[in-house]
Length: 96
Image 1: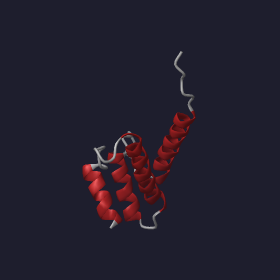
Image 2: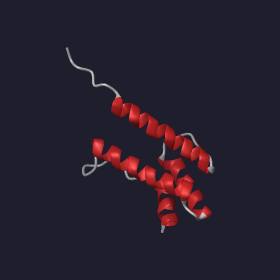
Image 3: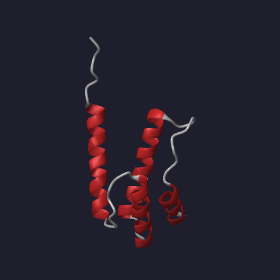
Image 4: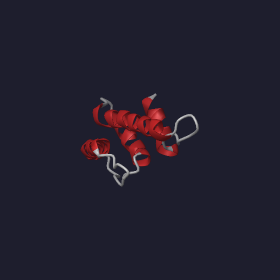
């Protein structure tokens, strides 16, 4: 099942933002989807599933990573999480 779903993501990408899921809710859902794919790509016991997940990430991530190495995708994800923490912790500018 995972292989089939990841094949669809590889070909069609993740769902796009729409009227039902938009803005911050969409951004959070996308982060959760990517987190699940990265987890499978790095930790799944089947090499076939790991490779399919990495190929799906090549499409869905928007990154310039074209690797089939788990370490490269883990490094990419660590960078995404670091950027997310920085975004959340950034001060909100006050209007004068």
